[in-house]
Length: 194
Image 1: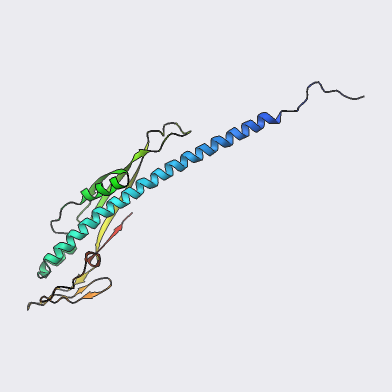
Image 2: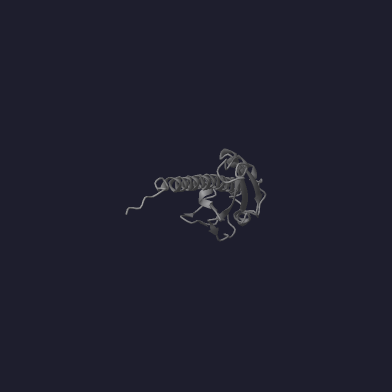
């Protein structure tokens, strides 16, 4: 005796297939949203890093200019290398670089040889399957420091300038011929602190 089925199970795999495909598509869109957020976050970090470095490099250049101006007065050198001289605040430079990276920056001078920058992207993360991300912007933080690269031993009287020992070179300065002086990159290093 053969048993006759009243209801077949053919076609039952189709709803499962649709559910699995729908779930995979949702995951793909969620990964895309995470990717969008990561790209936006990287843009914010790039803007913060560039802005902090720009402010610090501008101050480095001003300190180097001050050293060249006072090269014949070695009593002022240590204050220049320590950043204990009056130079203009370079946060304006941070704002310029942030704008070039499509962001805004909040900059503060953190001591004479350091700048802290908080940057926020102008673009939002964008619409995605994750609710609430349409208006979110990415933020990032960076700190750039200026590090002196040179030391010297104060010379005695007699019009002799001290020898300047920098990272890669020793500079013997002749007060009668000051054509070969170290540049800003010889006197100071600028790098990110975090």
